[in-house]
Amino acid sequence: MEFKVAMQQVGVDLDALRKALCEADPAALVDLDPLDAGLRVAAQVTTGELAGLLAEAGYPVGPMAIQPQPSVCCGGCGG
Picture (tube, one colour):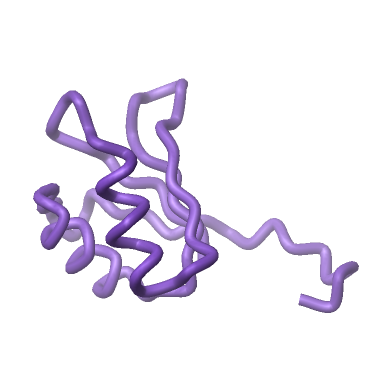
């Protein structure tokens, strides 16, 4: 799943977030969205699991802050 996460905090520690996410999904990706300074997350987790992982990493967010994104998978790689 891909998610956009609206962050209240400034100065997000991406390395800490990557570590937390990769414990749940070793292939997880996270970066800052240059358009709105929120997070872009790609991980095989549910919205609730992502909220829990963010909170454990020190970045709690409300339920409306996490927006699942439509899939961009074309199916060409078999995934």
